Figure 1 (tube, rainbow, N blue to C red):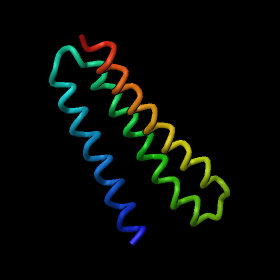
Figure 2: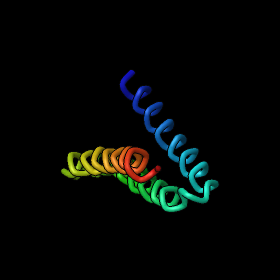
Figure 3: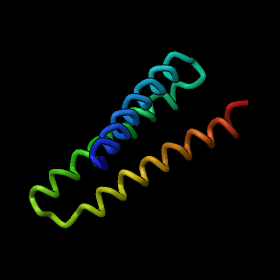
Figure 4: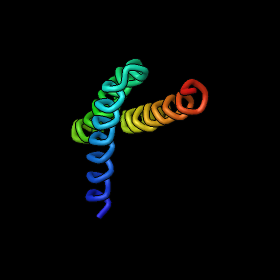
Length: 89
């Protein structure tokens, strides 16, 4: 069950990031934000891909890659919330 929930969370995170980036790129005022989201999406996706690879190769970097995923998600959410509260006037 845990794996199924993880797959759903990963797929929806990537899908919603794509939708957000597309919508922000369509608006002229939000081009920078639209360029920032795909960069964060790539970082999140690469770090998530590294997790099972590191488990298969018995590398001790699982904690590092999982923290990179969490911190990049937190950074993305912080930038989005900061932009919409302070800069979007």
